[in-house]
Image (cartoon, rainbow, N blue to C red; front, top):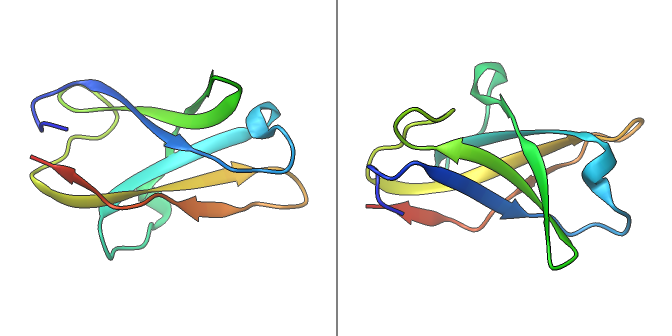
Length: 94
């Protein structure tokens, strides 16, 4: 992804049941960093070919603006009593 691009960043979620009924937040951080309270952003669910994805708009004017480097997304799903947090594979911003 180019740093000047404004687009939806989608993170696929693997779950035994459909997670899209629950609230979801996403943090986009440099590879190796862990999210802190202020890093989380409200995300939206998208279903593509029957698979759930957590999505957040990134780039100029989006929820997160990224500089060149390697990143991971962190996805937090609030599904009481559980609150799983999953990470994506690392990706590159050019």
